[in-house]
Image 1 (cartoon, helix red, strand yellow):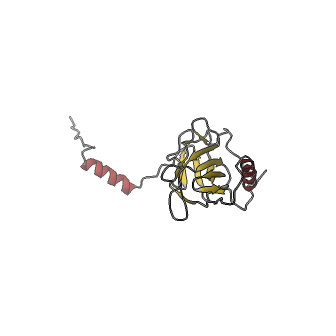
Image 2 (cartoon, helix red, strand yellow):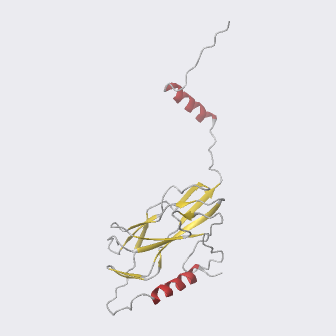
Image 3 (spheres, helix red, strand yellow):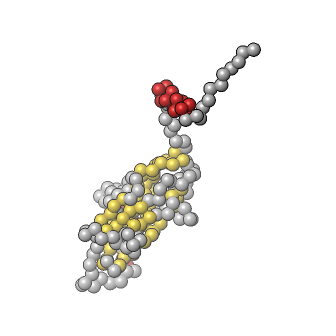
Length: 195
């Protein structure tokens, strides 16, 4: 199996092969990434995850970078820049979560005027499992300068479960809830007459 880093390098070489030639004036941009959604989400199998994965790109001065192409990759492995990822396997519709709108395991979007890139909705697959969404900036030329392939340095953990845990109610909490419902008029006591 190939590591995530080697897959990224191959992907970068292919994209750079079709990119324009660099000039002496090329400015390389090193964006700053800020996650805008929680690092972990949980949902039932077959249902959408609660929030669309989103992150903001800014330059070193904190100015939002609009129009930058960002990819979101679904994986069952935690990639790291220097670690091999032997169990790397993109989602292939075998119970894994998938992006909606017909996308499989990869979606690319451009950042908006605020520098925000938001992936399409992710729908949990058909079996309980854990997966990750890994954001990358793809090689490209923009008005901001040139971007090379960059791992966002963050990942989003997805749990798809067969059932969500139901917290057990303590006797004290049960009595407090019943008392509150009684006080609000949601529960009424009936007197029983014996004949």
